[in-house]
Amino acid sequence: MDFNQLKKKAQDALGKNSHKVEQGIDKASGFAKSRFGKQAGKIDNATRKAKDFLHKQERGGGGTPGNEQQR
Image (cartoon, rainbow, N blue to C red):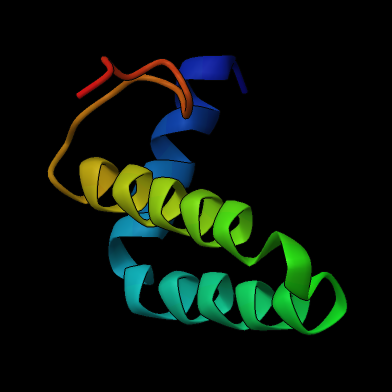
């Protein structure tokens, strides 16, 4: 299996299970905040970026996390 096939398989899985993935992101965020509460702002920022990336993949967008244009 080449990289493009693997990428397509991952995108399909995300599309079919995006709600579960988003729940996992929220759960991980909550755990991180419980352990590193002073970093809550950074954790929230990372959570938002992860969800933005997930939603972009749902819409068929490409790219990699962190490489989007600054707003």
